[in-house]
Image (tube, rainbow, N blue to C red):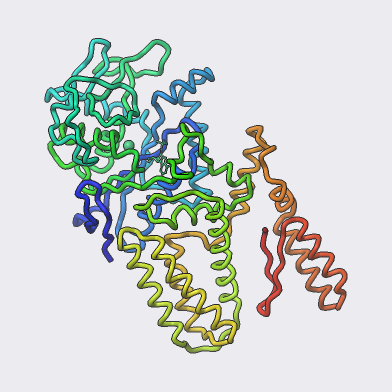
Length: 491
Ligand code: AMP
Ligand code: ZN
């Protein structure tokens, strides 16, 4: 199956085509490791994960590259304030970033590239631009890209750049004005700041040049797909295109995917607005990592999404439904043969794949799976499910979960990590009391008590059985008796 994906550059939904003999090259802008990521950031990484997993489901070989921006204005400012070398400062947040990705079940890209390890490639790219007159050095030693050298500037963001001021310059990494300016490629060293001695002088790279140099290093001068959050379209990606295409005279990335924002009450979730939650904030409040993943991927990447706690509660319930159904289906004693459910499982899988192929429509992809679960639950109630149905349903669930990845319960592990971190970071007061109660008992202890309760019931010692149920409930453990046996879960 082919993935049809909206391309910001063409303004159309287009098939993502594979060049013969090469894996599909994807470059996705990674984090700036100056602080803990908020869940708006993670929405973008999760949606790129959906892209990656869908391509794998469709059998497309991949080479996915993600950068780590480990030098920039904010990093230098924060590290200097703490009197730390920037490498020591960023290592802390890079580690936290990968822990958060693991908690959210985001797969690692094939290549992870740190900006500070690719200074040579950046310098060579700037030299190439300078040789063509597209880069110039200012009086202070900094290098700028000459916007006038790239008449196609603006083709990605479709901005009206009539107000473009020839020769006006900007040297901050992030700017949001609609006017275009010559932008910094290389910033001359300032006293006390981290810098590199290079052929173009002592200094450090600007943000935009990093991504061009690292994308070309790992994917070649022209590659398949470039992704990032919608705020990166301008100026970051526009600048990447300008400097890359000016240097190579080739199309930089053929396809551009932009993940729309996570909003809070209509405004972009962001550090500067102060309206953000980190993953850790939410885990400490007692929300499960799987629910956060499910909520953030269930609204398609092409739509903005409003963050609400109700949304997390809905996602938690939906995952419970899936996990309970799966456990029930696996445990059921079924006769051989198959019913119409087998065909229904096949249709659900086809609809699931088709929705993903249609511009990664995750909301539409979810729907047939939940409908299948509803039908199969009803059939199980009536004792009408046969073994062949089960095989087909489990296969469909497996495909579903290869993209959504919420079936296996590894939530307690993520929560436990967050709690350990809160203790070490002096934030233990933020841990929801219910969480501490739930984690005060290990899985093995729960199993033991559950077995003891079953034995007590067999002996008709209902007082003891009830006592155990209450004891477990106080520790946040819920017991469910069904005709297929006893199951338990953490609240
Ligand atoms: P940063 O670490 O700030 O460079 O951002 C990492 C990624 O998160 C970038 O691709 C941003 O575009 C993206 N991003 C930032 N805020 C949001 C948001 N509220 N919703 C979705 N993506 C975001
Ligand atoms: Zn980038």
